[in-house]
Image 1: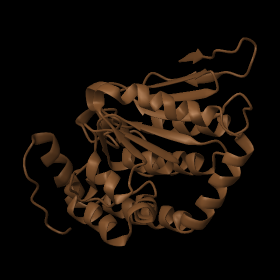
Image 2 (image 1 turned 90 degrees about the vertical axis):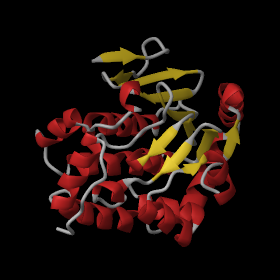
Image 3 (image 1 turned 180 degrees about the horizontal axis):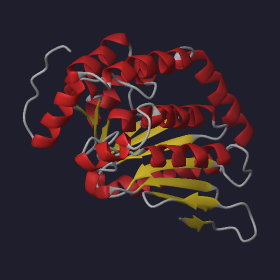
Length: 274
């Protein structure tokens, strides 16, 4: 475990092996760092994100939280590789769910603006994390996907509330039931993302947006965020509870076991509704 901080003698932020956390010029950068798996998320990573964001909430040095992923993707969601499933087996079935819910709650409750930087694939609970942020910036190479039903699960991490609040019931149903990839341009037209930029200009455009927020009126930004979230995310807590209950039952189903095996074996699943 390592510690990263840019302010001598000040409170520090902790990075773990798969999560890099740094503070510089008012921006707390939280970077998911498993590029070989498109930043698939573990319980430790989700709790690490939550811890960093919770700490930032009371840190006057932090003006903006930037959430991103290393490599070519934002996040492929909770890991379902054999390695990730072995990690899950060592903890309770609710561990990843509870960690994801904690991270989503932390991002929504954060007083400062949170910016999701999506340069590539953004799927599963990774998409929930992105939508829990206040500004979602996407490269034109990015896409969004709620792929849960492909492995016999349901959306979690507050997705049933976050996506419906952003794009409406019918489009949220399309993403959740059909598990389609939604390219960045279409996601923008739906209102799922704040802006889309060409891949070659993405980093520079992200820096401009974050710079605007860092130099903005912090109290005004905080009160604006709180007001809009209070008006639009009234169902978030209920969604988190319903998703947790439903997902825990699905995680013990034969369909989930078959869906996971099929994913690992790169074949179509054969669901039995059991």
